[in-house]
Image 1 (cartoon, rainbow, N blue to C red):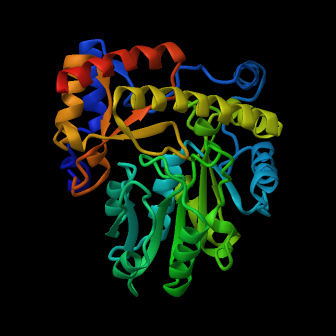
Image 2: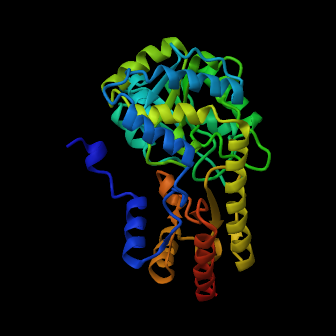
Length: 383
């Protein structure tokens, strides 16, 4: 067995979801919406399944979807992408990440990562032969700091893996953060792999800025997006990869020997969805912002300390007053009070950050309200 995978423990998501099922808990741990997703996009996918071609589509993706991706990012982020040579479709963003890391890393190359991080990052980097150099980010702002970057980068740095907006911190890196990181990438000739799946799920008038758009970054950035996050269809697993044509030639070879292609009916539906007007995206953001505020205000009334949530489907509470052991807190919360949450220490390789707990607010009002009633019981029990 390869030790990278054989030695991995059961993920905290599996544990908490299993406990949620066993105890009939409300699951605010795993990140998926209650809503089934936009009906018109699902209808396009259903019709394409019945009436369309269900044989192998092109390895790089349906031309109509690649054209739609290029047009979408030109309209929303000002990027000038060539659909024929700089855009590729993958079976989800995790496949895109795996393929990019396999294509870019040689054994011994150093890879800069930021904690908290998506749990797939470290195993994928290590399986590709990379040497992780981890930069811990500190709550509540989770900002990049020059001294920490200077300690992580070296002449052996090959890749920087950035998640922006950042899950699980629910934060959006600002212009100063991005400019600082871009300067380090240019100075050390590193390629930035940017996991930007939450790019449309940003709140309070904020706008996502892709690292690819910064000076000197166009030719050294791999940008990754996700239809599952944009359209609240997490099971569809349709990802996008955008990169300079020179990079894309190698990225495509890695993709060719992973999944090769993605269901054509889903690609057709996503092409339709990406062309939707701004009203859809504004409405989606407004709906999630209302859900965020409903949960955050309810938690605040109960006396929980709620951290700001600028993006994603998540918010965090600081449980330092309860003893600061996030794993024990979450286990007690699901077993005794029937609410599943995620301890943020699971997103730090050294589990050093032990006083934050992540909750998902992409839920119906009734689900949020029921969870708040149970969280009130948890609060009273801890008093």
